Image (cartoon, rainbow over all chains, first blue to last red; front, side):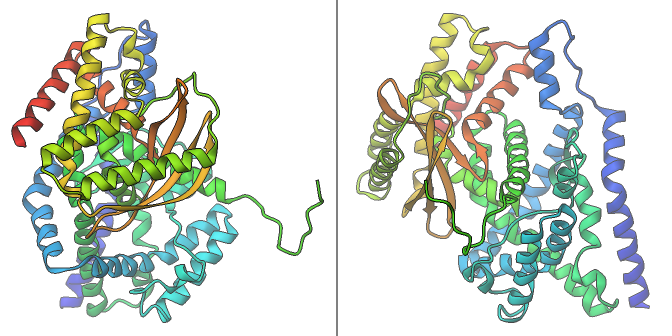
Length: 270
Length: 207
Protein backbone atom coordinates (compact mmCIF):
# COMPACT_ATOMS: atom_id res chain seq x y z
CA UNK A 1 0.00 0.00 0.00
CA UNK A 2 2.79 2.35 1.00
CA UNK A 3 4.72 1.55 -2.15
CA UNK A 4 1.67 2.27 -4.27
CA UNK A 5 1.14 5.60 -2.51
CA UNK A 6 4.77 6.54 -2.94
CA UNK A 7 4.72 5.65 -6.62
CA UNK A 8 1.58 7.72 -7.12
CA UNK A 9 3.08 10.61 -5.21
CA UNK A 10 6.30 10.47 -7.18
CA UNK A 11 4.37 10.34 -10.42
CA UNK A 12 2.26 13.31 -9.40
CA UNK A 13 5.38 15.22 -8.34
CA UNK A 14 7.06 14.53 -11.65
CA UNK A 15 3.99 15.52 -13.60
CA UNK A 16 3.46 18.71 -11.65
CA UNK A 17 7.10 19.74 -11.88
CA UNK A 18 7.21 18.92 -15.57
CA UNK A 19 4.26 21.20 -16.07
CA UNK A 20 5.53 23.84 -13.68
CA UNK A 21 7.70 25.83 -16.07
CA UNK A 22 5.21 26.30 -18.91
CA UNK A 23 2.41 26.73 -16.38
CA UNK A 24 4.26 29.46 -14.56
CA UNK A 25 5.16 31.10 -17.81
CA UNK A 26 1.50 31.13 -18.83
CA UNK A 27 0.45 32.42 -15.42
CA UNK A 28 3.01 35.17 -15.68
CA UNK A 29 1.90 36.12 -19.14
CA UNK A 30 -1.69 36.34 -18.01
CA UNK A 31 -1.05 38.18 -14.77
CA UNK A 32 1.80 40.68 -14.90
CA UNK A 33 3.85 41.83 -17.85
CA UNK A 34 6.21 44.78 -17.90
CA UNK A 35 5.13 47.67 -20.10
CA UNK A 36 7.71 48.23 -22.83
CA UNK A 37 8.82 51.80 -23.49
CA UNK A 38 7.73 53.33 -26.80
CA UNK A 39 9.94 52.44 -29.77
CA UNK A 40 10.47 56.15 -30.36
CA UNK A 41 12.75 56.35 -27.32
CA UNK A 42 15.39 54.20 -28.95
CA UNK A 43 17.83 53.81 -26.04
CA UNK A 44 15.11 52.88 -23.54
CA UNK A 45 13.55 50.41 -25.96
CA UNK A 46 16.90 48.78 -26.73
CA UNK A 47 17.66 48.51 -23.01
CA UNK A 48 14.24 46.90 -22.45
CA UNK A 49 14.84 44.35 -25.21
CA UNK A 50 18.32 43.60 -23.88
CA UNK A 51 16.94 43.10 -20.38
CA UNK A 52 14.58 40.45 -21.78
CA UNK A 53 12.48 40.33 -18.62
CA UNK A 54 8.94 40.96 -19.91
CA UNK A 55 7.46 39.17 -16.89
CA UNK A 56 9.33 41.34 -14.42
CA UNK A 57 6.30 42.30 -12.28
CA UNK A 58 5.40 38.62 -11.80
CA UNK A 59 9.02 37.62 -11.32
CA UNK A 60 9.39 40.21 -8.59
CA UNK A 61 6.34 38.78 -6.81
CA UNK A 62 7.89 35.30 -6.88
CA UNK A 63 11.19 36.79 -5.71
CA UNK A 64 9.40 38.18 -2.64
CA UNK A 65 7.60 34.87 -2.06
CA UNK A 66 10.91 32.99 -2.20
CA UNK A 67 12.52 35.47 0.15
CA UNK A 68 9.75 34.92 2.69
CA UNK A 69 10.00 31.13 2.34
CA UNK A 70 13.74 31.39 2.69
CA UNK A 71 13.62 33.66 5.69
CA UNK A 72 11.34 31.39 7.69
CA UNK A 73 12.32 27.95 6.44
CA UNK A 74 15.47 27.39 4.41
CA UNK A 75 17.77 29.94 6.00
CA UNK A 76 17.18 28.90 9.65
CA UNK A 77 17.62 25.23 8.71
CA UNK A 78 20.80 26.00 6.76
CA UNK A 79 22.22 27.99 9.67
CA UNK A 80 21.56 25.07 12.00
CA UNK A 81 23.19 22.73 9.48
CA UNK A 82 26.31 24.91 9.32
CA UNK A 83 26.39 24.97 13.11
CA UNK A 84 26.59 21.18 13.37
CA UNK A 85 28.86 20.50 10.36
CA UNK A 86 32.31 21.56 9.21
CA UNK A 87 33.35 22.79 5.76
CA UNK A 88 35.04 19.44 4.87
CA UNK A 89 31.79 17.60 5.69
CA UNK A 90 29.84 20.01 3.52
CA UNK A 91 32.39 19.48 0.74
CA UNK A 92 31.86 15.73 0.95
CA UNK A 93 28.09 16.20 0.76
CA UNK A 94 28.60 18.41 -2.27
CA UNK A 95 30.85 15.76 -3.88
CA UNK A 96 28.28 13.06 -3.19
CA UNK A 97 25.44 15.03 -4.76
CA UNK A 98 27.61 16.01 -7.73
CA UNK A 99 28.49 12.36 -8.33
CA UNK A 100 24.83 11.38 -8.54
CA UNK A 101 24.40 14.00 -11.28
CA UNK A 102 27.47 12.83 -13.20
CA UNK A 103 25.51 10.46 -15.53
CA UNK A 104 23.29 13.38 -16.46
CA UNK A 105 26.35 15.43 -17.38
CA UNK A 106 27.73 12.48 -19.35
CA UNK A 107 24.53 12.23 -21.43
CA UNK A 108 24.46 15.99 -22.00
CA UNK A 109 28.12 16.16 -23.02
CA UNK A 110 27.45 13.37 -25.52
CA UNK A 111 24.43 15.26 -26.86
CA UNK A 112 26.58 18.37 -27.16
CA UNK A 113 29.22 16.45 -29.11
CA UNK A 114 31.82 17.11 -26.40
CA UNK A 115 33.56 13.76 -26.51
CA UNK A 116 36.44 14.74 -24.26
CA UNK A 117 34.14 16.14 -21.56
CA UNK A 118 31.90 13.07 -21.86
CA UNK A 119 34.94 10.85 -21.32
CA UNK A 120 35.95 12.89 -18.28
CA UNK A 121 32.44 12.57 -16.90
CA UNK A 122 32.44 8.81 -17.38
CA UNK A 123 35.83 8.40 -15.69
CA UNK A 124 34.72 10.62 -12.85
CA UNK A 125 31.55 8.63 -12.24
CA UNK A 126 33.32 5.27 -12.33
CA UNK A 127 36.25 6.39 -10.20
CA UNK A 128 34.36 8.45 -7.63
CA UNK A 129 31.58 5.89 -7.24
CA UNK A 130 34.11 3.18 -6.38
CA UNK A 131 37.42 4.54 -5.09
CA UNK A 132 35.64 7.69 -3.95
CA UNK A 133 33.19 5.61 -1.85
CA UNK A 134 29.96 6.48 -3.61
CA UNK A 135 31.16 9.95 -4.54
CA UNK A 136 31.89 11.16 -1.01
CA UNK A 137 35.48 11.74 -2.08
CA UNK A 138 36.66 13.15 -5.41
CA UNK A 139 39.85 11.25 -6.33
CA UNK A 140 39.10 11.84 -10.03
CA UNK A 141 39.82 15.56 -9.70
CA UNK A 142 43.20 14.80 -8.14
CA UNK A 143 43.98 12.49 -11.07
CA UNK A 144 43.32 15.20 -13.65
CA UNK A 145 39.60 14.74 -14.28
CA UNK A 146 38.06 17.88 -12.75
CA UNK A 147 34.32 18.39 -12.56
CA UNK A 148 32.88 20.39 -15.43
CA UNK A 149 29.34 21.68 -15.48
CA UNK A 150 26.67 21.13 -18.02
CA UNK A 151 22.97 20.41 -18.07
CA UNK A 152 20.10 19.97 -20.49
CA UNK A 153 19.58 23.71 -20.93
CA UNK A 154 23.22 24.15 -21.86
CA UNK A 155 22.85 21.34 -24.37
CA UNK A 156 19.94 23.25 -25.86
CA UNK A 157 22.14 26.36 -25.91
CA UNK A 158 24.83 24.47 -27.82
CA UNK A 159 22.13 23.37 -30.26
CA UNK A 160 21.30 27.04 -30.83
CA UNK A 161 18.21 27.44 -28.66
CA UNK A 162 18.14 31.04 -27.34
CA UNK A 163 17.80 31.60 -23.57
CA UNK A 164 14.40 33.25 -23.84
CA UNK A 165 12.93 35.65 -21.30
CA UNK A 166 14.14 35.65 -17.71
CA UNK A 167 12.03 33.76 -15.18
CA UNK A 168 12.15 33.81 -11.41
CA UNK A 169 10.55 30.55 -10.35
CA UNK A 170 8.90 29.89 -7.00
CA UNK A 171 11.21 27.72 -4.85
CA UNK A 172 13.73 27.18 -7.70
CA UNK A 173 14.78 30.84 -8.06
CA UNK A 174 16.54 32.50 -11.04
CA UNK A 175 15.96 30.79 -14.37
CA UNK A 176 14.84 31.38 -17.94
CA UNK A 177 12.48 29.76 -20.40
CA UNK A 178 15.26 27.54 -21.76
CA UNK A 179 16.84 26.88 -18.35
CA UNK A 180 13.50 25.95 -16.75
CA UNK A 181 13.44 22.86 -18.99
CA UNK A 182 16.27 21.53 -16.84
CA UNK A 183 13.94 20.61 -14.01
CA UNK A 184 11.82 18.00 -15.81
CA UNK A 185 14.91 16.74 -17.71
CA UNK A 186 16.92 16.26 -14.50
CA UNK A 187 14.28 13.98 -13.02
CA UNK A 188 14.77 11.40 -15.74
CA UNK A 189 18.57 11.50 -15.80
CA UNK A 190 19.55 10.20 -12.39
CA UNK A 191 20.69 6.68 -11.49
CA UNK A 192 17.72 6.51 -9.07
CA UNK A 193 15.24 6.83 -11.92
CA UNK A 194 16.86 3.97 -13.80
CA UNK A 195 16.90 1.65 -10.75
CA UNK A 196 13.89 -0.54 -9.88
CA UNK A 197 11.27 1.20 -7.74
CA UNK A 198 11.59 0.44 -4.03
CA UNK A 199 10.60 2.17 -0.79
CA UNK A 200 14.25 2.44 0.23
CA UNK A 201 15.17 4.08 -3.06
CA UNK A 202 12.32 6.56 -2.74
CA UNK A 203 13.41 7.44 0.79
CA UNK A 204 17.00 7.80 -0.42
CA UNK A 205 15.88 10.09 -3.23
CA UNK A 206 13.99 12.39 -0.88
CA UNK A 207 16.84 12.42 1.64
CA UNK A 208 19.36 13.21 -1.09
CA UNK A 209 17.21 16.04 -2.47
CA UNK A 210 16.70 17.49 1.00
CA UNK A 211 20.37 17.29 1.85
CA UNK A 212 21.31 18.86 -1.48
CA UNK A 213 18.95 21.79 -0.87
CA UNK A 214 20.20 22.41 2.66
CA UNK A 215 23.86 21.98 1.71
CA UNK A 216 23.49 24.40 -1.21
CA UNK A 217 21.64 26.96 0.88
CA UNK A 218 24.31 26.68 3.56
CA UNK A 219 26.96 27.56 0.97
CA UNK A 220 24.97 30.70 0.07
CA UNK A 221 24.36 31.96 3.60
CA UNK A 222 26.94 34.71 3.72
CA UNK A 223 26.93 35.61 0.00
CA UNK A 224 23.17 36.04 -0.24
CA UNK A 225 23.04 38.09 2.95
CA UNK A 226 25.84 40.22 1.57
CA UNK A 227 24.25 40.84 -1.80
CA UNK A 228 20.90 41.64 -0.21
CA UNK A 229 22.58 44.08 2.14
CA UNK A 230 24.75 45.88 -0.39
CA UNK A 231 22.80 45.84 -3.68
CA UNK A 232 20.39 48.68 -4.37
CA UNK A 233 18.05 46.30 -6.19
CA UNK A 234 18.89 42.70 -5.19
CA UNK A 235 16.40 41.30 -7.73
CA UNK A 236 18.23 43.04 -10.59
CA UNK A 237 21.60 42.02 -9.14
CA UNK A 238 20.69 38.33 -8.95
CA UNK A 239 19.24 38.53 -12.46
CA UNK A 240 22.45 40.01 -13.81
CA UNK A 241 24.67 37.50 -11.98
CA UNK A 242 22.56 34.57 -13.13
CA UNK A 243 22.59 35.57 -16.78
CA UNK A 244 26.29 36.31 -16.89
CA UNK A 245 27.04 33.03 -15.15
CA UNK A 246 24.96 30.99 -17.60
CA UNK A 247 26.44 32.76 -20.62
CA UNK A 248 29.91 32.13 -19.23
CA UNK A 249 29.23 28.42 -18.70
CA UNK A 250 28.06 27.97 -22.27
CA UNK A 251 31.10 29.92 -23.47
CA UNK A 252 33.36 27.64 -21.45
CA UNK A 253 31.99 24.61 -23.31
CA UNK A 254 32.88 26.28 -26.61
CA UNK A 255 36.30 27.29 -25.27
CA UNK A 256 37.09 23.75 -24.14
CA UNK A 257 36.17 22.43 -27.56
CA UNK A 258 39.53 23.42 -29.03
CA UNK A 259 41.51 20.63 -30.57
CA UNK A 260 44.99 20.26 -29.13
CA UNK A 261 47.73 18.22 -30.80
CA UNK A 262 48.91 15.08 -29.02
CA UNK A 263 52.25 15.28 -27.21
CA UNK A 264 54.03 13.26 -29.93
CA UNK A 265 53.22 15.83 -32.66
CA UNK A 266 56.25 18.01 -33.27
CA UNK A 267 55.45 21.64 -33.89
CA UNK A 268 57.61 23.28 -36.59
CA UNK A 269 60.29 25.58 -35.27
CA UNK A 270 59.72 29.29 -35.91
CA UNK B 1 26.27 24.02 -8.79
CA UNK B 2 26.72 26.97 -11.10
CA UNK B 3 24.54 29.09 -8.88
CA UNK B 4 26.67 28.18 -5.90
CA UNK B 5 29.86 29.11 -7.70
CA UNK B 6 28.81 32.49 -8.92
CA UNK B 7 27.08 33.57 -5.74
CA UNK B 8 30.01 32.46 -3.59
CA UNK B 9 32.55 34.14 -5.77
CA UNK B 10 30.50 37.27 -6.16
CA UNK B 11 30.32 37.69 -2.44
CA UNK B 12 33.99 37.10 -1.89
CA UNK B 13 34.84 39.85 -4.32
CA UNK B 14 32.00 42.05 -3.13
CA UNK B 15 34.18 44.51 -1.18
CA UNK B 16 35.09 45.75 -4.62
CA UNK B 17 31.64 45.21 -6.08
CA UNK B 18 31.26 48.87 -6.77
CA UNK B 19 34.77 49.29 -8.00
CA UNK B 20 35.31 48.60 -11.66
CA UNK B 21 35.33 50.36 -15.09
CA UNK B 22 36.22 50.04 -18.76
CA UNK B 23 38.87 52.49 -19.82
CA UNK B 24 39.19 53.33 -23.48
CA UNK B 25 42.41 55.15 -22.75
CA UNK B 26 44.09 52.09 -21.36
CA UNK B 27 47.56 51.15 -22.54
CA UNK B 28 49.06 47.70 -22.67
CA UNK B 29 49.98 46.23 -19.30
CA UNK B 30 52.80 43.77 -18.81
CA UNK B 31 51.46 40.46 -17.41
CA UNK B 32 54.35 40.14 -14.97
CA UNK B 33 53.88 43.68 -13.69
CA UNK B 34 50.16 43.10 -13.28
CA UNK B 35 50.84 39.91 -11.35
CA UNK B 36 53.22 41.73 -9.04
CA UNK B 37 50.72 44.57 -8.64
CA UNK B 38 47.92 42.18 -7.62
CA UNK B 39 50.23 40.23 -5.35
CA UNK B 40 51.37 43.37 -3.54
CA UNK B 41 47.88 44.84 -3.37
CA UNK B 42 46.48 41.55 -2.09
CA UNK B 43 49.16 41.27 0.58
CA UNK B 44 48.37 44.78 1.75
CA UNK B 45 44.64 44.04 1.83
CA UNK B 46 45.12 40.78 3.75
CA UNK B 47 47.51 42.55 6.12
CA UNK B 48 44.89 45.15 6.97
CA UNK B 49 41.96 42.71 7.33
CA UNK B 50 43.91 40.25 9.49
CA UNK B 51 46.00 42.86 11.28
CA UNK B 52 45.49 44.62 14.62
CA UNK B 53 43.29 47.68 15.08
CA UNK B 54 39.65 48.52 15.48
CA UNK B 55 37.08 48.13 12.73
CA UNK B 56 37.14 51.88 12.14
CA UNK B 57 40.92 51.91 11.76
CA UNK B 58 40.78 48.94 9.38
CA UNK B 59 38.00 50.58 7.38
CA UNK B 60 40.01 53.77 7.00
CA UNK B 61 43.11 51.86 5.92
CA UNK B 62 41.10 49.83 3.42
CA UNK B 63 39.46 52.93 2.01
CA UNK B 64 42.87 54.47 1.34
CA UNK B 65 44.17 51.26 -0.21
CA UNK B 66 41.14 50.82 -2.47
CA UNK B 67 41.48 54.40 -3.72
CA UNK B 68 45.10 53.63 -4.59
CA UNK B 69 44.59 50.35 -6.41
CA UNK B 70 41.13 50.76 -7.96
CA UNK B 71 40.15 53.28 -10.63
CA UNK B 72 37.12 54.33 -8.59
CA UNK B 73 36.13 57.43 -10.60
CA UNK B 74 36.30 55.59 -13.91
CA UNK B 75 34.42 52.70 -12.39
CA UNK B 76 31.71 55.04 -11.22
CA UNK B 77 31.31 56.43 -14.72
CA UNK B 78 31.09 52.93 -16.16
CA UNK B 79 28.49 51.93 -13.59
CA UNK B 80 26.39 54.99 -14.41
CA UNK B 81 26.46 53.79 -18.01
CA UNK B 82 24.27 55.55 -20.55
CA UNK B 83 22.70 57.67 -17.81
CA UNK B 84 25.91 59.67 -17.62
CA UNK B 85 24.48 61.57 -20.60
CA UNK B 86 21.19 62.11 -18.79
CA UNK B 87 22.65 63.27 -15.47
CA UNK B 88 23.29 66.96 -14.94
CA UNK B 89 26.87 67.96 -13.98
CA UNK B 90 25.68 68.42 -10.40
CA UNK B 91 24.04 64.98 -10.37
CA UNK B 92 27.17 63.43 -11.84
CA UNK B 93 29.30 65.03 -9.15
CA UNK B 94 26.89 63.90 -6.45
CA UNK B 95 26.85 60.38 -7.90
CA UNK B 96 30.63 60.14 -7.75
CA UNK B 97 30.66 61.34 -4.13
CA UNK B 98 27.96 58.82 -3.15
CA UNK B 99 29.69 56.07 -5.10
CA UNK B 100 32.92 56.59 -3.17
CA UNK B 101 31.03 56.73 0.10
CA UNK B 102 28.97 53.63 -0.65
CA UNK B 103 32.09 51.73 -1.58
CA UNK B 104 33.65 52.63 1.76
CA UNK B 105 30.57 51.52 3.67
CA UNK B 106 30.32 48.26 1.74
CA UNK B 107 33.93 47.48 2.54
CA UNK B 108 33.48 48.27 6.22
CA UNK B 109 30.34 46.14 6.31
CA UNK B 110 32.30 43.11 5.20
CA UNK B 111 35.59 43.34 7.06
CA UNK B 112 34.52 41.00 9.85
CA UNK B 113 33.37 38.32 7.42
CA UNK B 114 36.80 38.21 5.81
CA UNK B 115 39.01 37.92 8.88
CA UNK B 116 41.52 35.15 8.30
CA UNK B 117 41.42 35.64 4.52
CA UNK B 118 44.37 34.44 2.44
CA UNK B 119 45.02 34.33 -1.28
CA UNK B 120 47.28 32.90 -3.93
CA UNK B 121 48.02 34.38 -7.35
CA UNK B 122 47.64 31.95 -10.24
CA UNK B 123 47.65 32.65 -13.99
CA UNK B 124 47.66 35.88 -15.95
CA UNK B 125 45.61 36.17 -19.15
CA UNK B 126 45.45 39.11 -21.57
CA UNK B 127 42.02 40.67 -21.96
CA UNK B 128 41.32 43.67 -24.15
CA UNK B 129 43.80 46.41 -23.33
CA UNK B 130 44.59 44.89 -19.95
CA UNK B 131 45.15 41.57 -18.23
CA UNK B 132 43.20 39.33 -15.89
CA UNK B 133 45.13 38.07 -12.88
CA UNK B 134 43.53 34.92 -11.50
CA UNK B 135 43.67 34.37 -7.75
CA UNK B 136 42.26 31.85 -5.30
CA UNK B 137 40.80 33.43 -2.18
CA UNK B 138 40.31 31.37 0.95
CA UNK B 139 38.36 32.43 4.02
CA UNK B 140 38.06 30.20 7.09
CA UNK B 141 34.93 28.03 7.05
CA UNK B 142 34.26 28.58 3.36
CA UNK B 143 35.19 26.82 0.15
CA UNK B 144 38.00 28.55 -1.79
CA UNK B 145 36.85 30.86 -4.59
CA UNK B 146 38.56 31.77 -7.84
CA UNK B 147 38.55 35.50 -8.45
CA UNK B 148 39.99 37.29 -11.49
CA UNK B 149 41.22 40.89 -11.23
CA UNK B 150 41.19 42.92 -14.43
CA UNK B 151 44.13 45.32 -14.43
CA UNK B 152 44.62 48.16 -16.89
CA UNK B 153 46.88 51.13 -17.27
CA UNK B 154 44.81 54.15 -16.27
CA UNK B 155 46.50 57.50 -16.75
CA UNK B 156 49.95 55.91 -16.46
CA UNK B 157 49.17 53.85 -13.36
CA UNK B 158 48.11 50.25 -12.99
CA UNK B 159 44.61 50.03 -11.55
CA UNK B 160 41.99 47.36 -11.01
CA UNK B 161 39.02 48.03 -13.27
CA UNK B 162 36.93 44.88 -12.87
CA UNK B 163 36.51 41.77 -10.77
CA UNK B 164 35.55 38.53 -12.50
CA UNK B 165 34.01 35.69 -10.53
CA UNK B 166 32.83 32.49 -12.23
CA UNK B 167 32.41 34.40 -15.47
CA UNK B 168 30.50 37.27 -13.90
CA UNK B 169 31.80 40.80 -14.16
CA UNK B 170 31.08 42.79 -11.04
CA UNK B 171 31.15 46.11 -12.84
CA UNK B 172 28.45 44.90 -15.23
CA UNK B 173 26.46 43.53 -12.30
CA UNK B 174 26.65 46.84 -10.49
CA UNK B 175 25.72 48.74 -13.63
CA UNK B 176 22.67 46.53 -14.09
CA UNK B 177 21.76 47.00 -10.44
CA UNK B 178 21.91 50.79 -10.70
CA UNK B 179 20.20 50.88 -14.11
CA UNK B 180 17.27 48.90 -12.65
CA UNK B 181 16.75 51.60 -10.03
CA UNK B 182 16.75 54.35 -12.64
CA UNK B 183 14.51 52.43 -15.07
CA UNK B 184 11.98 51.60 -12.34
CA UNK B 185 11.74 55.31 -11.59
CA UNK B 186 11.02 56.57 -15.06
CA UNK B 187 14.63 57.21 -16.06
CA UNK B 188 15.31 59.67 -13.24
CA UNK B 189 18.93 59.75 -12.10
CA UNK B 190 17.76 61.50 -8.93
CA UNK B 191 16.03 58.24 -7.91
CA UNK B 192 19.40 56.46 -8.05
CA UNK B 193 21.01 59.16 -5.96
CA UNK B 194 18.23 58.84 -3.36
CA UNK B 195 18.57 55.04 -3.33
CA UNK B 196 22.33 55.32 -2.84
CA UNK B 197 21.85 57.82 -0.02
CA UNK B 198 19.25 55.54 1.62
CA UNK B 199 21.62 52.60 1.34
CA UNK B 200 24.42 54.58 2.99
CA UNK B 201 22.08 55.57 5.82
CA UNK B 202 20.91 51.96 6.23
CA UNK B 203 24.42 50.52 6.37
CA UNK B 204 25.67 53.29 8.65
CA UNK B 205 22.85 52.70 11.13
CA UNK B 206 23.53 48.96 11.10
CA UNK B 207 27.18 49.44 12.04
